[in-house]
Image (cartoon, rainbow, N blue to C red):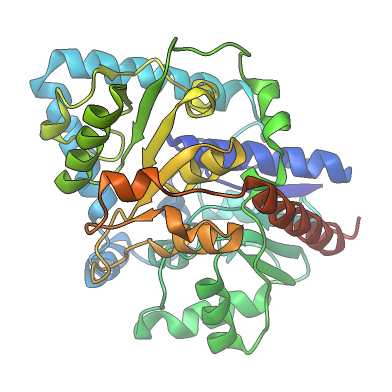
Length: 386
């Protein structure tokens, strides 16, 4: 029995779908598995909470916390938004409670977590940014609590950053050396492992890309949720110039803007930006919206992934500035490089004319993806001895 460490319960479309895809990959390989339920990862730490928080502050890693505070404040001040957010949360909760094969309960503390580890043959930590700076500190997804003799596999794990803080290098090296198999999602993360341990590790596909566009249809309704053509906007960051460019696209094409807003933080200026702001959207509906969009604008890795799978006219922004601490832009850079779609990376100097003249050979993209799928599934098969 293999235990899967993913963020299946996190209210984020990409997080839930990559966790779902990881389970599907296990089923294709005939691996017996359970996705591990957990409490907050920091509930399983050995180090004091105050020390953990101080280290987060050292690397200015408070962005997610601050975004959540903005959302909480907006809910108190805006009853309509509070109801909309509650509706969206219900769709996430429905997906997480019905689409996964999980353990019966979440261990209450580090001791019970360590005892649970004895019941499994090994563990696989999945995709998403599960080896970020704070993850290395709390130790859940780095498997500090897993005995040395238990199989430890990393599949398409992301570090999110391009370097490990100097004060964390020893700890990172120690946990990496305990893993039997490591394959990561970005080349920059592979370079970090090489630097710290001397190990050459491969880049593999994000789990969502292990499934074809056709396979993803199995969890969607066939007909479009929205009728007619539209510009889908899925932006997590707060960059006004990006909204201005999208408005220009609306003027040029005459298409309505459909947006999913206020997911990682509440952005007041986004109120009134879209012709339709949707909240009755879970992961299944999100896929449908991408599949039927005329154009897609996003700063999200996984929205870019599904735009590629569905051969959309999509445009990917940077969410963060290059100099911003803990920026995670490299994820999309690696994805677009892998698929030969770097022309779809949008910067401030580009005009609507530039965007409308971009052409993509998706037949070449599919060939690249199929080759990488075979490589990635073979890695999993060998790592899990299947």
